[in-house]
Amino acid sequence: MRPKLLLLTGCFLCAGLAVSAQESTIVKLLNDQLKKEKPMREPGEEIAIVQPFRIDEQHVLSVEFSDNDPYWNRQRLTRLEVPLNQISSIVKDINVLFESENKAVKQTVVVTDSTGKAQAPQVDYTGLFFTQICKERDNAEFRDKMVKAFRKAGYTIGCVHWYD
Image (cartoon, rainbow, N blue to C red; front, side, top):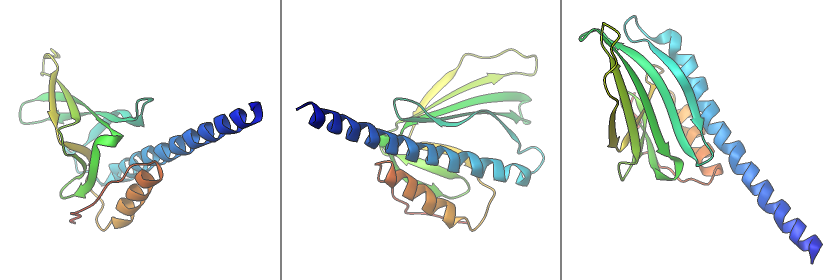
């Protein structure tokens, strides 16, 4: 009885590691693409990555970045979070984004004015997770790798629109 239990436990652990490895692939693809696009940004379009893409133990994808709002002379710190099992598709229009059908994307924004005073965090729930990946054209290969990595991690996502 004991060898069967050990074998079964080993199988579950290996399956968990495989999913974890694929989730790491998702994170690596996103962070590599964001890094690749950094030199393509025009002055005034820059973003600073405060926390690169990561997936936590609860399988929540997150990223945190800051950018300047030149129109209002303020800085925004934005954190996006979405459970992987709530992502239904990857889309590209002006930006590559993940869609969630039930507003599962948590967006937390802290605005700091020109005097350095931070406002209270503003938390919204939306169906769109904007990745800030927006510069490279003809990058359907990136989309295909993302869909494949999600599938290997146990999540099925679609792609209806991919516009350059």
